[in-house]
Amino acid sequence: MKLPLQEKLYKAFAHEKRLEIIRLLKINKYLTVGQIAKTMSSSMQTTSKQLKILADAHIISSEKEGLEVTYFIKKPMSDIVKFVVGYLQ
Image 1 (cartoon, rainbow, N blue to C red):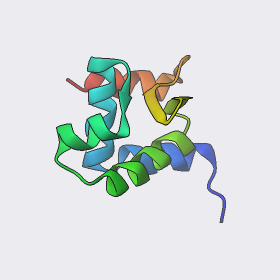
Image 2 (image 1 turned 180 degrees about the vertical axis):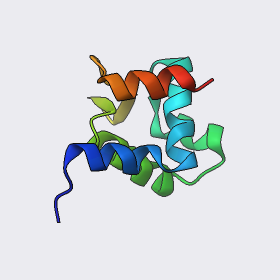
Image 3 (image 1 turned 120 degrees about the horizontal axis):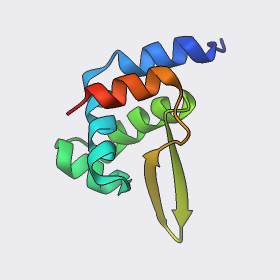
Image 4 (image 1 turned 90 degrees about the horizontal axis):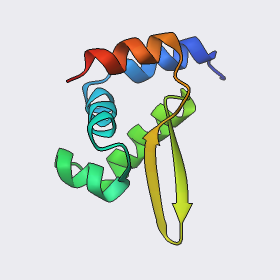
């Protein structure tokens, strides 16, 4: 079942770990899955799943350089993403 984008956004914001990832990307701008997993004391597999949900909701994007994938908050941000990112400290 395909979820509309608005539902994907709500789903993405409804999990503490995903909000933490957004907060980390807000502070650091660009991070790899390994850096995020290490900072959050989480497995790479779990972190990758959370990153996929955020990417599917168009909150984050990624760039691949060689074997490394770097994640960042997607620009331009929608109003609701701006609000949530602005709220996270």
